[in-house]
Length: 336
Image (cartoon, rainbow, N blue to C red; front, side):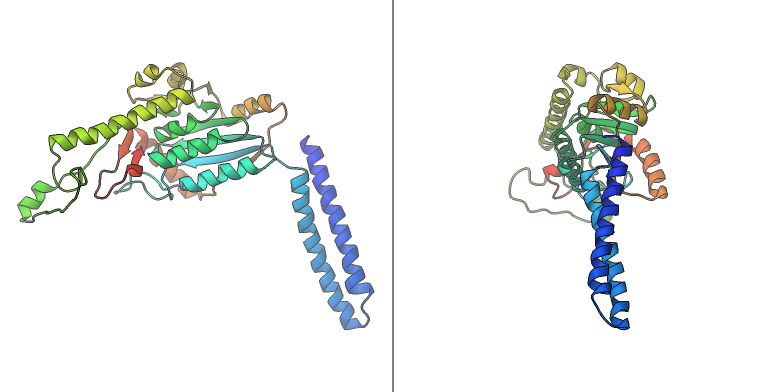
């Protein structure tokens, strides 16, 4: 269905519905009532019914003659469950939470008009489980899914991309960082200098492993490193399976980030191109002109400028990180 046909169909529905509402309103509220006051009130009610008819007609027209066949969803900034900063002090801009992104993808999947999903990835990564939730939502979308990145698609962003059919990037995009990093701050020496003692009560040998401010002994170090190693294996396996790649080739990237051109040469990116060229590919897949409905959250120009600059700086040297703080759970390990 062409854009012109869809527009004509929507206009026809709106005009017919508005005309019917106007006729019904005139008969009920103007023709039948007697008396000047009643007629005046009837005119007001008739106009109200006309407005309601136009709105209903617009909704029916949008459902019958959709204006889009591609839904676009953005993942912008560090990935967290609720959209807050993933660490303290903040190391990157805040962004919509993973639950919100998943909801948008699921809404696109339920929309019969959305035949394809275009996922815009501009993220240095984030928390493990929220990143995987977005990846699963993209993988479960009923139709072709294409991810494209402009600035950064690293760590958790690349984890998400592995759930899409294709990944597109620009020549200057930063892609990769398939690796693991864990860090913590110790403060025992500082406490000793100021004459403070830290005492903890725990049940379970490793309950407080890595908790601030105590030093980590060798046994705890092996335990924590084992967690990081397990996450790295999971990351490699997920990417290799999603992109139909040899796990050894994924490990050979050594958690480096690459510019788009080299990422393409290494097989980390399927194609290089602009958003328009990505849409051209979707048109080939759909067999019709691609019209996009953006479901990405609206952000102010200042937020977009801050997010782009902070994300680029944040991506360098980043891998999959863990917030090793008191009470940290497995879900707080991060791809960033």
